[in-house]
Amino acid sequence: MPHLGCHIVIQRSPETIYQLILDLSGYKVWLPASQNYHETLVTSDYPLRVGSTYVDRGRAGELRGEIVQLEPARRIVFQQVLTTRRSVLTTRITYTLLPVTTGTQVTREVDLHPQGLLMFIQFLFYPVVKKENQRILHAMQHYLNARATQ
Image 1 (tube, rainbow, N blue to C red):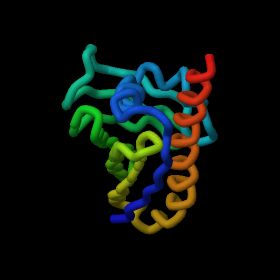
Image 2 (cartoon, helix red, strand yellow):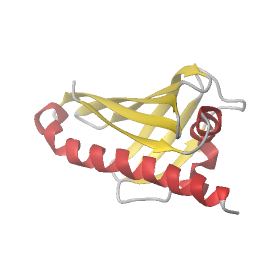
Image 3 (spheres, helix red, strand yellow):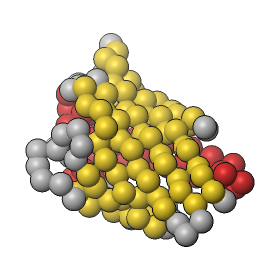
Image 4 (tube, rainbow, N blue to C red):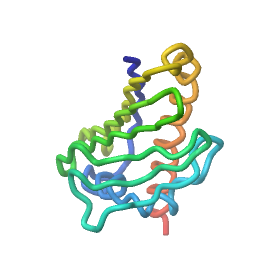
């Protein structure tokens, strides 16, 4: 079970960052599409809560996601499943928000659980996931910093 994570400090409150992460339909505003990520579509009614569902569309296909844990202003955990003809990839994404003197330390951790043929090539995902973790955190920081100067 590979575990990949990174963190960044953003000069905002944990509550502000928590709300940004939880607003899945708002990702299109602050998270540009990439080679691997295209869009997030909410498939549940608002307000979002544990059990709410969504779909992330990307190069690999559609990842069906669910919110599995919410601790306001502290932690959000998502679980996504990508199913192909011969494989299943379950991904658990955890955001942890820790207040620090200069804002909030945002940690994004990804745990991969490949099954089937993906088990044999999972090492190919590591650099992609690491790069995507960093891209998401930097996009979040850039968006929130730009809003502060407006």
